[in-house]
Length: 229
Length: 380
Image (cartoon, rainbow over all chains, first blue to last red; front, side, top):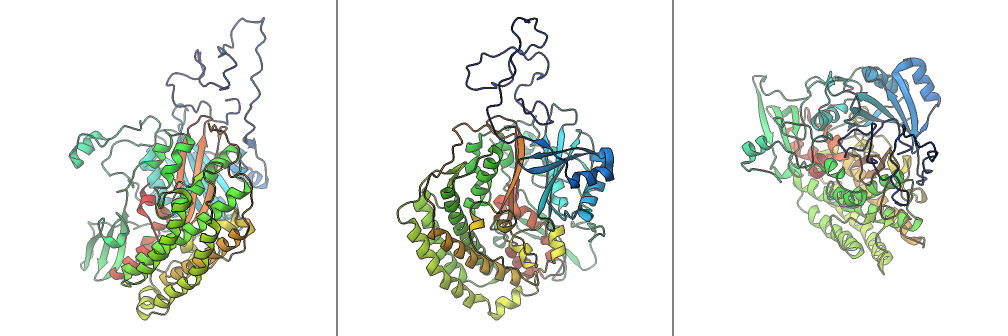
């Protein structure tokens, strides 16, 4: 977990804290199992044994690196602090922005930077983070033949500006995002569920919605069975 | 383009109706909806004045399942989204995970993947052509289309044992070597197929009823198509020459010559012509690829346990229906943290309302057919 990107502690399984204590190492970092599990104790008085530097990451796979190209500079000049961070992951540009400015930045990307196609809009849930949702917009520019990913963090009850007025295709995509994650898009003309029944309770792609969970009351009432499993 | 898009009234209100307006339900069990799609139409006489698609009947929570499977275990599930183009689904997923790992399939695997995927494109377009013509009232083409599709499925069966949901690729390359006679089978099919496409065209292209039912029906301008995120043959028939095989070449597409057909008018007839030409181009790609399949390994060294380094990737391919994208987030464990599928059918179906407004009820059937949706992919 040495090369974790900005989001910390993505491992969803152990419900206990990941930062403090951590008597059990959260993940077997090297599955070679040669290294005994080090009790990661920063306050340990074991001065005798100088803490070994973490084993070099044996996976030489791709890693996110900071990005500072002309597009990012233009965005920063225009929107200042709303452009939080820009990275390049697997050669793909990702710009982290402030959720409140999502619509303005989207409109700028469409009109000035010619990202005229909203390829996809979705979310990722990081329940342990203060603002648990990543809102992801994948953009494409026909002129430049280039993709750009906008990312914004949103808290559980925080309304995210809708981009339906910028790209009409966002209509169904935002409805799906609302359906699956419960993210509310402010300014959407008709925000309602799209794949699940309107009366369904819960948002299944949240990490705290277990894979076997279902709206049993709905299933009993509408399907006449005890369980859909 | 700089104007704000007007999205008001995108849905059908059942409560506010004009004096002559009625609401008509189509589906979810209507045969021409190609699965379980329910369309609520607001009609003024025979004219459609508004519509709303009601979907989700086939929702299986594929993206949730992905988070509880290892990377390899999830691969067979993707075949069951667009089940008439399972090979394309598998290619997109395998390449996305390879990108996430920083691995690449060996050249031989990439060429074999290209051949199978192009055969799948032909098979998928044949299903579209047969059913689309059937919906409009031309009963003959479907028999011819399924006759040729059968030959493609036989090649798949001989290659991997399965015909429909093939699971034919693996992350890192291929599970199986090609069988003896694979090249000859593909070659024979492609050589025969040229005249078969001409045969379909004699049934339809200048058929007065076909032209009357498709020309000027369901027009979608290029601006509308882009604003609505539409991709694939529907976008190209509106005049925008864009194909991911050319824009971001994957597999082995950069090695072959092929054209991207476009249409001028963006109507149902143009979409028909574009897909017919795409089948010819797919045939061309197969014939070029079969001439020179490089020798060598068919699997890259990716290891048995896949643990992509933390991070994320978006990878998309030109599936028969449009841009099929996978957005995968890894947290460094053996299971994906999030798999998002960007389904072409779902997003293209959203353009239905724009295409159907002002059309007749009978045209609705033509418009659903021309978008070429598979409900398994719309609902996932």
